[in-house]
Structures are given as C-alpha cells and as structure tokens.
Image 1 (cartoon, one colour):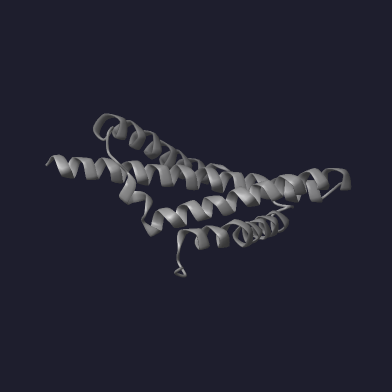
Image 2: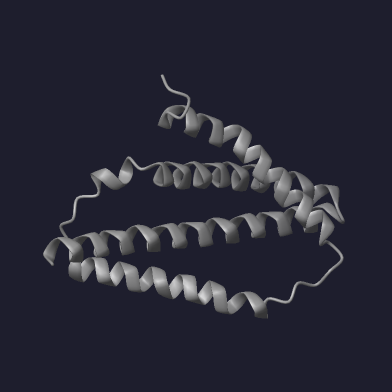
Length: 148
C-alpha cells in the first residue's frame, strides 16, 4: 500500500484534519469575538464563485451530458478535494456538538463556537461550489476538445 493511497489520504483527512479544522475555526472565532466583520467585501467573490458554479453546471448539461468522469475521479487533486471536504464535514459536526454544549455554559462561548461553526459552513460551501465548478468546467472543456 503506497503512502498516498486514497484510503490512507481519506483516513488522515477525516479525524486529524477535522480536529485541525475545528481548532482553526475556534481560534478564529475566539480572536474575532469582539469585532464586527463587515460582509460587503466578501459578497462579490462569493457571488462570482456561485455564478461560475451555476454556469458550469448549465454548460455541462448542454455540452457534456454523457461524459464519463472516471479518469477525473482518480486524479490527486480530486482526492485532495474530497479529503478536505471530509475534514470540514467532521469539523462542522464537532462544532455543532460543541455549540450544543456551549449554550448552557453561557457567554462568551456560544458566540465563539457559533462564529466558528458559521465560518466552517461558509468555507465548506465555498469549497464545494469551487470544486464543482472546476470539475464541471473541466468536463465541458474535455468534451469540447474531443469534438474539435
């Protein structure tokens, strides 16, 4: 079994990566607990990623409906994307249970954990949208390249 096998990568990503993502999100939540985050600078990049994901899905439905994605599933980038998404899933699950524990404890912990949970969900959403957009765009480009 090689060091970079998919099973080993996903095993390393699930628990240690989830704990690392949880600790990072909690640290950011703690460091930003007394600040107000202005969401306006983040709206344009998030909207661009979301629009790209929608356009890529539409282009795939139009141009590459019957493209097999077997070679794409074996790429290292795809495996790393799945591993990071797995780590974020574990982190969000841990943070949700931490929020349930922090609610009866009282201030400031529910705010810190809530901010960390929201940050993790936002990063997970952006990573998912970005990955889906990249996957669908690459499938469309490969389909158009085969036609030409």
